[in-house]
Length: 96
View (cartoon, one colour):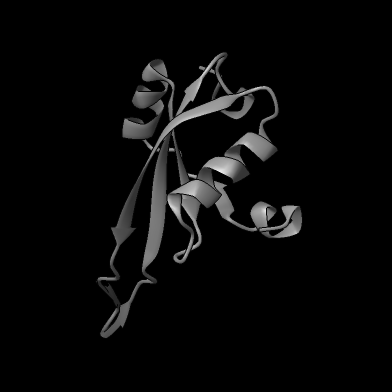
């Protein structure tokens, strides 16, 4: 996979109470493309944050669910998230 495609693998970091607490163990959570593999995610993180080595990648598929907007019902988008364990110094965007 080329570098242009690797930059598209990671959509955004997910910042929640649980993910911020996991940064103490060098684990960071990202929303990724649904068809991304663990190897592609690891390469994309290493490309986005040079000098860091990915130790492990765990992925979770987040299915859509119903959401109510007034009287109408709709569905949220399904997504995929990756929990990445990184060796080395903490990442800048999650400095706590």
